[in-house]
Image (cartoon, rainbow, N blue to C red; front, side):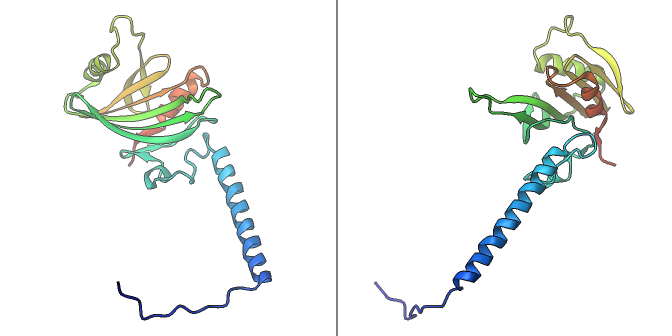
Length: 195
């Protein structure tokens, strides 16, 4: 076993008063950061849709798969991003959850997602795909036509999906026990391709 030829030497550290200043200064910075983070989180709503305390660059940029997020209902929880595929359609989603409750469960407040796939060539094809994906009875699924900005869509009580262009669609769903239909439609209208 070899020994290092370098010797360690004692280096004088900061004085006690300097340490107190460092610790006090750090506490002020951390307290300021806490106030700023709380203010950012409280600002989530129609006027400030994306807090800057989200971990990813895409979340800070308020986008999902090239779609901007211009409106979020107030009082939603913490976001997480997901990517998955089913039947040759790729989903990119952001899900906001509140929790845990006393039993440790989380509640999904809001989900925005893009769907990309060759089979999504019009609104009827999108609906047929979602009937299979969500295991819906097409005759019993109460859908009504809606316009989401310039896009044709279909809405149910807690979700709206809309055809953007061949191969591209979007869907927004939210917890209707906590949020209104206006929250759903406003969020969907604000979830659109970035220009």
